[in-house]
Image (cartoon, rainbow, N blue to C red; front, side, top):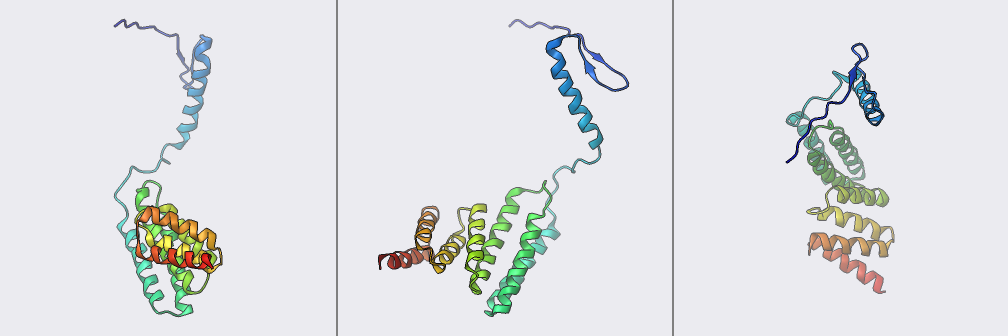
Length: 196
């Protein structure tokens, strides 16, 4: 293997720390390097810390919002459903507000569950478009193992009279989730309505 060393004429300005060269083919690359260096120098001390374990207090607060929302939703009144929506919204905000260096998978799992639960709360007060949007968001965050979100969006679409769209959604959900009981039942209901 032939190895050669070529000494390139480089000059470092001691005051500006700019690197330059009389060779034209190096000048553009060195100008870019100098610009990048000048951009990064003022950021010293503003770089986020290295990844740390997730903040257990934030996880506990998110779980608390979810549990309180579930408790409110079980009361089966319109006021408690609206309260559940608010609690789930606080939980979503906390989950999505995690620092960027915390694991994205954790954020997706927490947010997917909260969006699915909030979709159920919207359904309890017949807010079908909002429930459909939250169901779709939950599925987007977590496609597999999220049968409830698939069902909730499908049910919301059916309740809005968007039967064909509901059929397509539920069939896609069945492909992902397999023969999940609620989805199979909703699929039968949609097919029966469309057969009329």
